Length: 292
Image (cartoon, rainbow, N blue to C red; front, top):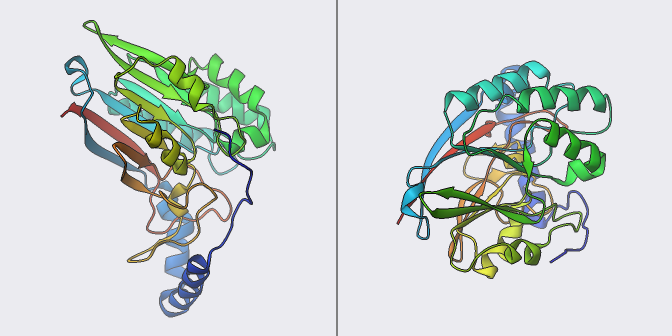
């Protein structure tokens, strides 16, 4: 179901208080070392994050399937071709069965042709026997969705645009599904479920994590993988993210149980301004699936 557009960032009273706390803590503990760390060190300190998830409907033939989840590359003058190549090398070192990408490949239109060429070159290097799959995010639609789709296709990446894709092993099936961007009113969950057999195990790619309330209510998905939030980019100990974008307010980072469905929100790899990360390392998630 489409959702009405909302402002990019919308501060609640709780978030306003967090900003005040941030200012106080920065005054107390800040300094040149903290600034240097947040701007220059942590953004490059990628966390290859392994985890195991049990999915009750997972067929035995897919026991131990390894998914690499990447999101929010945000190719720009910071996310260079060299950084993209390093990310792909880290993923390939993990030998995943499949790679999934959950949107926001670029930031803005500046040098867009160059950014897309760099993305195409590097994404084409991703090695996964079951394939590489993707959905678009809000920044992709705000930039040039058509050009980004062409880039993904040229790189050999299959876009799951409101549809389901069957993976087959030993006569059994696992479905990778995807919705187009929720923020921009392109998500069509009904169309996805038209291609999804009853009782099949299904994993949904959706850029915005708060879409999990709708997908979980459908009762047809075992896991949703999302990005969008960047984990807030700055997360205070015992407090959490300072500010998160619209549609990442309920499930901003990590693993959640939403009804009978798992929701995982990846902290992403790129950034938006200000390009800083603190207590919120960039992430490549490696998910090993097991049947319950």
